[in-house]
Length: 176
Image (tube, rainbow, N blue to C red; front, side):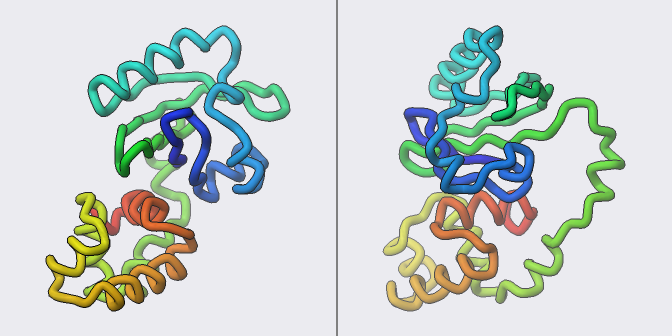
């Protein structure tokens, strides 16, 4: 799963995607989607990007190029504007059997158990797009308490900001 800005530059890249690209987060942030799009797929990517911005979401089969020039067929789902000017792209190698994906160890249950009920509630509202002051009002908390909860959530989910926390919580099934 990755998050990109309006210029298609990588902002956040989860660990499985970084492993696939064999690049660190800092290295990924120096790239744009186009850098990993095979030349013959440029028109398809441009069309998918326009559709994403026009309709708010898109999905389909694509092909990506690794930094070493390798090719990988993927299935992806893109969601526009999860935050202002931030777009979420979830993808997996095409053709993986569903039962194989389910067999991958998943730490979501452990993370859900480690997030407090209040942190889970806060993440649900954050996933709905509420900002800091709105979270404080909705949960009847001070802004400072909301910030403290967010810092704890970031540490537990191993992310550095709210967009990353929402994306990771969605990936783990902690929020809808």
